[in-house]
Image 1: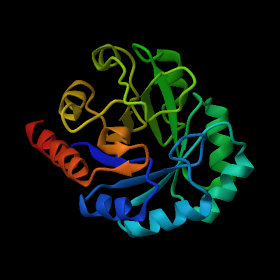
Image 2: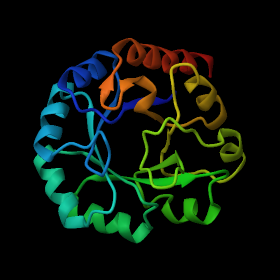
Image 3: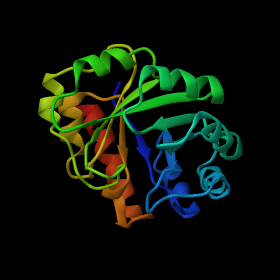
Length: 215
């Protein structure tokens, strides 16, 4: 088995349709503070354009469980991606409020902290390794140290999602280093924030497929 692809930060329906044409498994919209932020209604339209075969992901930070639950209902989300380095308790609370699967984001500067990975492993439905950039949620084009992360802790039960600084040119390196279940890209396939480059989307999906064959 190789990595699946998530295209995140989608704000345009045509980009969501292109994501589906690339055969990706996940499409994401952002409800947290970001240049790619959408309303629940816009998020629903964008994810509808991706079609039924693509899982619907919403990205949140600094929102309470009830507010997240409202967006989940309005945009018919299947997965909530929780930023802000959530605790296992927060993961359980949001799952109880929403009924959605929960991906918990750990922002890294080097190796993943073993105690935090252990806390979330099996509690979260996925653990996202993302680059830590002060004051920024994601979509910065910055990568963390994949080699340091590979040498450190990683989840044993929960799927591993890798985000941050991925591009068509380097995603195979990240896959070789970390063997993630999902690779998550936003700015690495954009012309500018929120506007995806369809050629780069195709190139990214192709690079992931080729990396699967190589593994």
